[in-house]
Image (tube, rainbow, N blue to C red):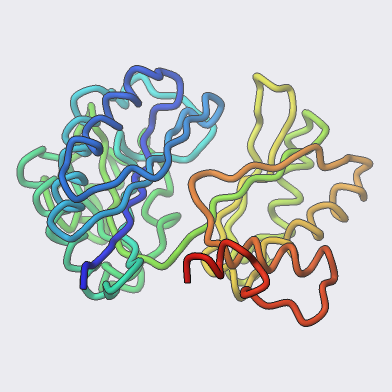
Length: 298
């Protein structure tokens, strides 16, 4: 049976469409790999590319896109709303079909070592690929961001897993790992007051007492003159999207602010949308076999 693995690299470039096209071309040129989605955001100054494939194809495409990022993205000139430490900031591998987490861990380590050795970029493992519990969390690794990593990388507890033990000034450092599905979902607020977005993010994220499987931060979308609660759902079944959305609406109302929209970055599992439809429509005895596309392709 064919194994299908997903790769979702995030890049510190969200303004130059030509550079994103160059990155995408590294994916579509690899046999056995399919491009699923890509998006770019100028306020975050960040792009996310999603592709899937078999084991050998995904490893080749992952390394090729890392090499291209090191050639065309220069962290010395990067500014953006989203935390970042490298040109290729983070690259997770996700088991999709007939693949195991252990296989994704092995792929992450193999690709990470190759990036460190051949591209001279420090690499950190995270999530399931990282055996050290103190270094599993992406936020802990990325804390201080690119500007402060020149000193952080010298600390004994932050020696890279692969590659040189000093900062790559142009490319920064890269974080590579294996994880389960993650939903990147943002809620836009009808205000330009970043303090409100930060307070709501603090209310819903796990690290400050909110939902267990949620990471959140406030983001200023200067080009649109609004702010946003930017989120990552690390387990959408235990922390559903619809439940967090409702809390954000109520929190926003406390400040006299409306939710004016939301956006999905990358892809989302169908179950998360089914669960949302069931909740808002209050459907009784709902099951997935009521969805025509599900019945057609099961």
